[in-house]
Length: 113
Image (cartoon, rainbow, N blue to C red; front, side, top):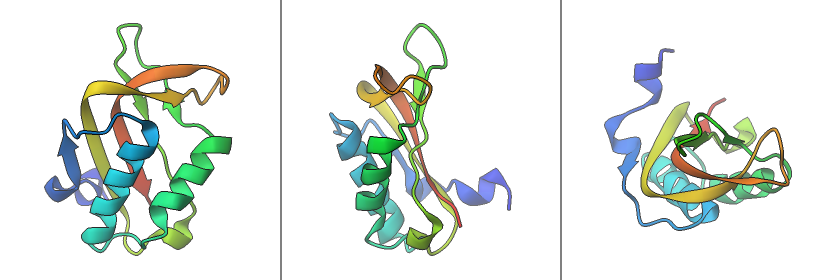
């Protein structure tokens, strides 16, 4: 399955109103659930996993950072990736330094089986 099959227009949120990592995760998970790609349990599972295994990635010093939150495949119906492009960054903990937070503008919520 190619990237074009995983990322669909109906799964992309541009400038959502999220102000926290949990809000953007919940909004993206809701989109995946509404479109039939994930179970309703996805949001809570991703938020819980993010607490112990953060997914923030430093991509550049200018703040163009990303996060790739995800959960166990049991919450997935069909493979897909929901994308959030934030106008105002939200803080995610760093994957490689969990005690630090970074501002993130791109969130790729993976729903992979």
